[in-house]
Length: 235
Image (cartoon, rainbow, N blue to C red):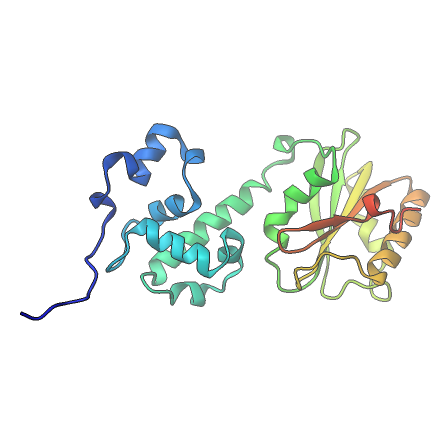
């Protein structure tokens, strides 16, 4: 008799009902599910030898978590075993919906009470960018976000950034304060000398325009730095 080493095809339906992601979501809410279980609901079915939860676990390991899935090129995700265009599209669409949720109407946004609040608003999106982007959060008198505007895309350095451009939208929106944010595609959020020089110029311009510059954040991969907390450019 010839033996076979092929793995059986596992399905979500093979799991006990209490372990099935959809049933757990309905009973306990989405917050009770792991990232792999949430991915399994999107994937619906697994592949030979892996149920959908195990495929989700493999993808999270391959791309180093949800942030990696967010940053992964569509084709690379599509080419993973058990994926294809439809499943890759579902994952990318779900991640994009999550990103857009963070950009909902200003009245639904909480006040920015700390650098962590500001970082949480943009970390998800900006940590996935492959080039440097500089954005400005426009805040009202209660430090609620009016808008987040992109001012520069490309290298952020003191020779290229025109400080007046950073305040154009703040003046238009009658913002009382701003928080400047840019990302480091390398993943290391350590401020550079140019970051400090730009910050110093922005703070001085804000004083002349009577617009408070509350902070300048540098976003990396899963990490961020507040130049205000570090005392860089705000002295």
